[in-house]
Length: 389
Image (cartoon, rainbow, N blue to C red; front, side):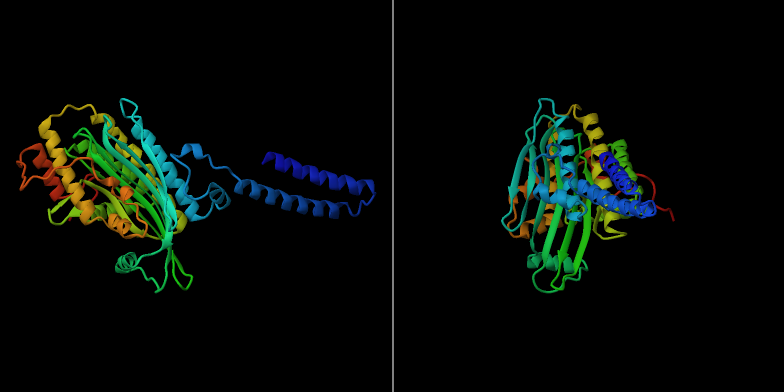
């Protein structure tokens, strides 16, 4: 940049000297202005070109991006490029934070895959670790034409989509972490961007996502820390976001046939298309960046806690509830399974290695297991922010 500016001043000086040597003193100001304009134009173009040519350091990611690096470098302001690079970074940061907690240096298996209909993804899975029994952190960047089932689902949410082929682009990061120790909670997060173009050329876009916690044993301080971290991320953008999206999360991650929530909630939102695309992206980025500070302190706090067979059995029973929700109710799982060219291994990475179902299992209400169940049946205002009547 500084070399470019110095070159511009050298251009000014060259033009001035040429005019002074000819003795055209009256023309000197004109020559100077012309030279200044030409040099400024040259400088602006050069700076713009340098900005567009900023190199992407792919070593910071778990694998090469799905979109070509050249395309991402040439179109840095396109929201599709911004979203892909953001989720690539979030995936890598979270994977490395999880690996750092393993005792024996267990690493993620990295599986970069492509989809013939358009795009692909990077699935990272750590299995049979000492701290994490199964940890999956997946990104997908896919495109193509929306299948009829997806169109119907979107119209049911109020999306006005024209008939005919509907080209779409979707990019997101999703993670589910199943720890080995029952006193370490499971976490799930997903942040995504979607855009669709109808037959009239009209483009619609929106963001969605959220972060939620599923403990096996209730720790109130952990719960407060988790929710407070998410609230701080939301408050940077709109103080109404946390209470609004916390309520949405409690309602979304509910298992109707069990009459209980999957966990203690967090935040969840969908169809976010305001106040602007850049503002919505900034909000989603803040939420994604809050995952590590919201969760990793809980891992470090409890990964060495002692436990026995009763705690392990309860953990496996609660994982059974997790599976029930994901396979029966989760909208993201349904969308993935009905998308042409779906990669089932990546979609089902959210399922634990082991789970358990017992007929009519009911813990004692006074037990620690019963205390957790009471909260799951009646979501709590962890930060005491709800208005009192």
